[in-house]
Image (cartoon, rainbow, N blue to C red; front, side, top):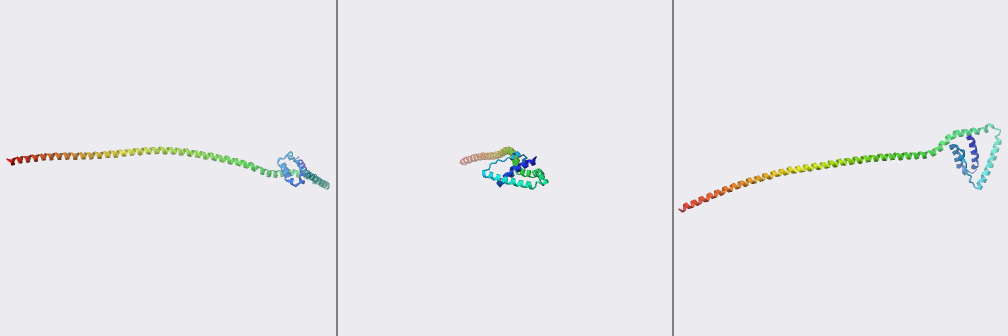
Length: 220
């Protein structure tokens, strides 16, 4: 069945081979037949000018004459005529496996590239989420450490203030004791001075009374 289709396709493509510029298009249609396996997709639009049309008609006539000459020459050799069907079948079965991967290799990488890009994007998104999660954890940990540091700093300041107050109280008490001792020393000195002055006053009175008595006795 596929050999017959290939034969029909060859008959359809034969007029196109007259103009060599159509060779890539013919090759593309034949290769698409081996890949798709559908001869209905190989219908070609004939948008040729009048000159190209006449060239194709002349080429087809020449090719048909050559084909008739070859047919008359090799009509007696039946094995040779039977061989093309086998060749077409083997070509259909074997070359389809060799040509299809080559064509698929030119198509698959695009899909693979898209899949790879999507996978890379997904991986990068996962990495971004992971890094964001790590950053959030680090930020929360930093905030917790900051709160702990602030609490310890406040506690240290409070303890320092208490120690300063305690030191000042100790210094104040010590200073108060020193001032009290100095005051007591001054009070003792003042008392001694007062006692000494009183004794001196008594001695002066005694001396004056003795002088008066002596003066009266001398006057008699």
